[in-house]
Amino acid sequence: MVRIEGGVYRFGRSQTEEKRLKVKIAEMAIQEVQLRIKALSEDMRRTEELHRLRLVRTAAAASRQTTFEWSSENP
Image (tube, rainbow, N blue to C red; front, side):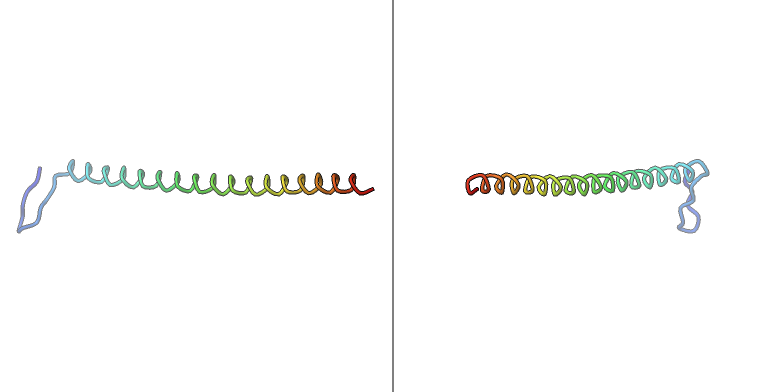
């Protein structure tokens, strides 16, 4: 129940508790979104790192292949 005393809204105990719970739920939802963003950022970082490693391996393999082919052609 809401009462007005001197221009100030006064909420009953159950309404105040309900508002606190809604605020708590909103805070938890925000925290969950922040955790998801953090997890996605970590996934992206790991994906980029794996991509770089694969590029290095591919470049190294191509370099070895080219060196092998060049040395085979010019004994």
